[in-house]
Amino acid sequence: MGLVLYRNMSSEEWDNLEKGQTPILPSKDGNKEESMVADYFKRHNLPHPKRFVSIAFTVASRDIGEAMWAYGSIRVFLNPDTVLPDLIVASPIDIQNDVYNERNNNIYGVVKVQGDKKNREGILVDLCKKRNEHLYSEARLYRPLEKRDILRTEEKEDDWISNLQKMS
Image (cartoon, rainbow, N blue to C red):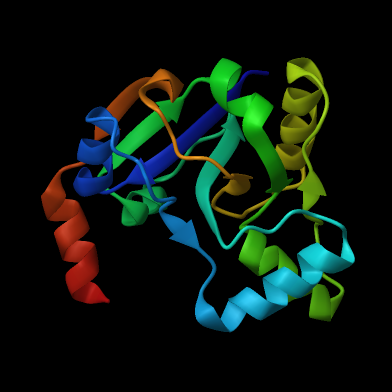
């Protein structure tokens, strides 16, 4: 079972990555969720920088799904050899949703990703097995993406993204 790491991004984020200009980490928790996530991470002794790169992951046998295009018109497939060693935390579902659901005792658990490449991959594959119907599993990278992290890309037509944004 192969692991697939990817990130959907805007064309602006992709252009900056191609130029080697990734000075800022593009993701952060929403204002409302920030304190809840920070508190959860503190209680579970997990590192919690305010900015990060959100990485989705799945096993090769599972469909990535159309809904992920809502996060950007360019899907970047990432190199496990360069990205896995730097992943710090992961969850079988969206990390904010996982933390939020703790109040209902419906938590999957955000875990620390550690060990060698094989161990890290095993942790993520196990988390994928717990995902059920959720759209994606999430890991956080606390460094900017670099060109060396990219295996390949695919693009979705802008019309699809534009239509989705108009509906919101």
